[in-house]
Length: 396
Image (cartoon, rainbow, N blue to C red; front, top):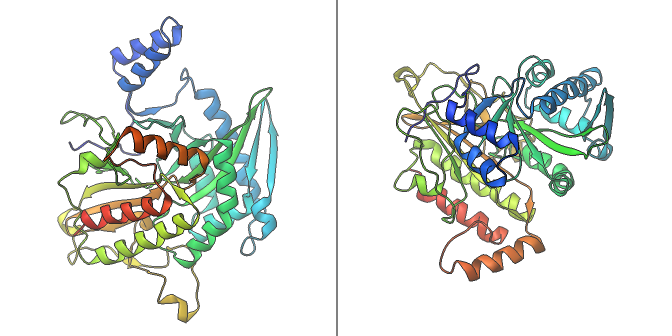
């Protein structure tokens, strides 16, 4: 079931059979069913080069993001975000398209508080190298991209999802200030892109939970339920990158050793926050990388620190309740927890699906359709409790 991960410059290419199917799909001779089958044949990670159907779109994203990040470099944040910062919308017009930056100053402050250097952020997302497309088994209609170094993750969003995200953004920032070692995915930007005479598209940028990707052997997307939570594993030795699901993890546990207490507490804090936002359907992403002998504590030569964390509340009376931990002095330290024999990559993603009328009706239908089965669409209170119970049952 283990799968080989990709290094920063390594990507998968479709097999000749997959290429043939792609050509058939593009020719228009087949239709929706062929495109679905084509997607199944092409699961994994692909470089978006010339000739790719999304090449023009991603080139526009790169050019637009380079210019948008330059604005934040020329006008760096001077303090914590204000109400105006959360509401600001900046539109830059380019040849054949325009790119909007939503709540730009607030996200610039967040990136700075995480210790991200704007020049590095700009270089990774700009035209320096092609984006990678990730094709997954997700039922979402969103498109998923990675920067060429796989450090940053981009995902298209519906307009209603962006509205919810921006409405909750001040509380999200406050939560990260209060709990600087939170497992919540770190959002780094929200943008819109409109091609001339076209419809506006929205996308978000966040830190990739699965970074750095080298030596990662298994990846999982966990929701704490059963329905549609199985992915056929890749054949042994296959280079295919798959994200497995709950049923694939049956009979397994995560050995976190002394860090288990911190992890359970942080899951409780973060899911309580999401429950208060009335959201559900978020996932716990997990990945595993076997530690080398010199990386296993106490033989580890890694230096641990807390300075890499987002800026938290500094008053002495609040430091005790922030649930801080020692962070490894490595990239993406906030999403890395070293167990006794393996390194774990952990993060909560897809944070802004509201439990409104649409989801309530979906819950009612699934209750009638699948009696006695567990599925993702339940109340935010039940969703949070169930995911915490899953984590407690599968860690030691």
